[in-house]
Length: 317
Ligand SMILES: NC(=O)c1ccc[n+]([C@@H]2O[C@H](COP(=O)([O-])OP(=O)(O)OC[C@H]3O[C@@H](n4cnc5c(N)ncnc54)[C@H](O)[C@@H]3O)[C@@H](O)[C@H]2O)c1
Image 1: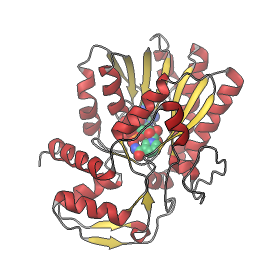
Image 2: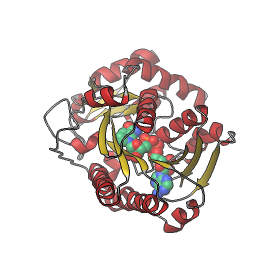
Image 3: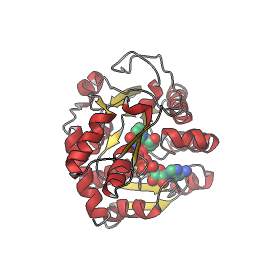
Image 4: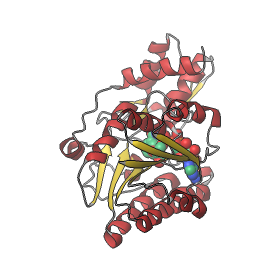
């Protein structure tokens, strides 16, 4: 298999790329080092993969038609599309930029696949597409999707484009809805990274929603296992799977766990919910377990502990 991983230098993309290379797949990676967070972190994420002869990397923007033209000679047979502008809150500040990358970039990827005759595509979607749906845990059979952020809207539109390309051009597309991913290399804007950094530096942390929000935190190793499950799953259709831990944890419990693992107390400011933030996320993974043999193994405490080990090594503390 020659697999194109878009967003290869990011948190999930680099972790997946390392795993695929270990499994002796040939991987072509692209990334434009989007300025959402530091290029240095992304270069460090991908450093190991760059030493592997099975990996070829190109600094390309998924919104550029020329970029896709350049990829047309690489014999790609599978695409794992992770490149995106990620994050709920920042999408409210840069709504058009989010839609450009997450919708137009995805559309250009699908056009590339259609023209190249690439059948198999995995698309990284998000739990945020369920939005304020109150029917918990969220099942992929529930079509009552109520996104409340531009990011969620852009992901849902990406899903719909995928469905369109399946129905009209026969592409085999698997949509994976990730639930808050945790572990080594986690993005600096995400809560565990932010809190570990702030508490380590004796800075205050802010709990939005007055601490009363809940998330289904899912370890990166389990996410990679789920993606690989989808890669080997024989489907000619358009299918959607939740990739979550199926266990929801409150923000206060999360902070207490970080405090305990760091051996330090947090100084906390409580603020009301931010626009775009949903109160809870919780995945129903029955279909994923049955069809992708998905069994999340790492709980939140262990995931945070592994993040802290990485953080200390990476930022030399
Ligand atoms: N991390 C999570 O908790 C989570 C949850 C749900 C969904 N997702 C989705 O998973 C995917 C990966 O997320 P992540 O957490 O690894 O984010 P990330 O920001 O670490 O990785 C995304 C990568 O895409 C690249 N990128 C952005 N715009 C690009 C463009 N125009 N052209 C080429 N590359 C571009 C970035 O430089 C980055 O390296 C995204 O699609 C995200 O929306 C992530």
